[in-house]
Image (cartoon, rainbow, N blue to C red; front, side, top):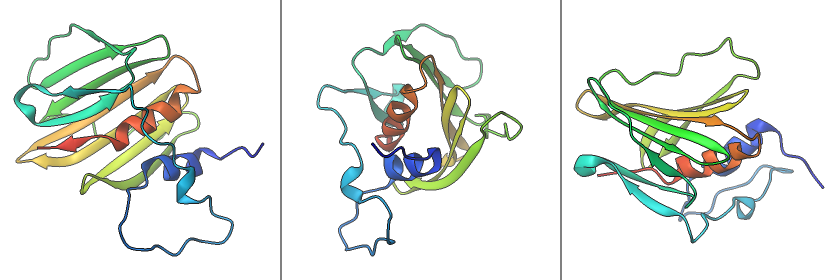
Length: 159
């Protein structure tokens, strides 16, 4: 069985569907290898309907209180997901972490920085609306949950 590198996994999971044909690089994994979002995932809508995303059904809401922004937290046996939507969301500048990797991608037409490092997968949108930014941070309880987190980031949609 072929093992995908972390960088290749990020590229596969975050590729956006395209209607035009795209020339693929030789030996590059086919776009058909991008896992589909499971049909049992549920839609989470941010209060005020600023954005939404899909999550596995085992992620459960955990009450938290934000000070100056919209924050939420969800937990499952494999991960803890939190998001911060506001002026001061983290830009994910953790370059000194073990296994740190970052990549700029487009998600729902917006530029985003996807970061992974040991035990973490996260995405930061530096400009969502007005001065608001969004950071979604996933603490991985299980290493294999990274692929799920990266899939989840693909589902983020802004209103």
